[in-house]
Picture 1 (cartoon, each protein chain N blue to C red):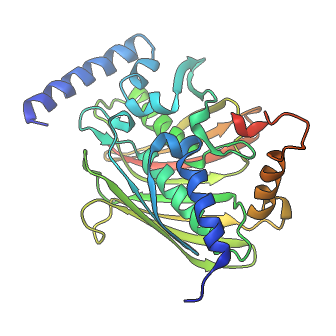
Picture 2 (picture 1 turned 135 degrees about the vertical axis):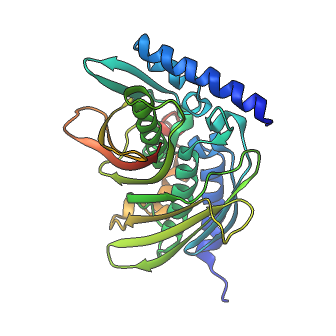
Length: 175
Length: 152
């Protein structure tokens, strides 16, 4: 496979943006694989994300977040010029209850890309990939706007850090 | 977890569910669920129906450059709200099991409080269908709607 310069640049940026910021940092997953249109991630079990206090199983919302993140990553990277892709909808089927105190693995892949929509599916499993705990399909919008491409966002952030910029850097990203 | 311990937890849970219904205090149910505290979900009785809300917090941000709330948080919040709706308003004491969950994102979730309300569309012997909607400024312009099935 030829060397993909865009992915080589996007991969560390996306990894940093998702693992160290906002909800991704709060959940504490790790992105294991980030290729064009394919994402793998691992989520260790956490006590404070339990949804059923009787059995100790993590809440379904955690699985929604993980699959949404993984599918979103795949959708963003499949594009020639990676950019932010808003989610249109997400459907999640829970096949079996998750077991407590075991990590959850997630894989997501883009299976079709049209001119306006990116179709993506993902699975979450614990012991056996053939027996997943959840399966999801998510569709994403392709937005034709330069301002949300990764390169313009990165450029904007870089310019803010330049020493000759007089105004302070306390905009939205410091929250 | 051994069986005796589970039985005790179940009894304790059922007792709390009964107390929450009697005192019209859905928040006490959310207090039992660690995930609710993690995202910061709250609930109250607001004439005849239950109103859920999620105050803004930094750990719920999905896109830091807008900033917008993470889509997974909105999904998790609606799923949680639907489960609480079932426990509180139907005669169910066990934790309902979610079977499927379908979410439509209509508008980006801005960095401010999200409100949600749910409606039980059908209750069968085994399955319950709940629809949920989330909004920020105006109830007529929802940011997301969800539909879910629960096994009871």
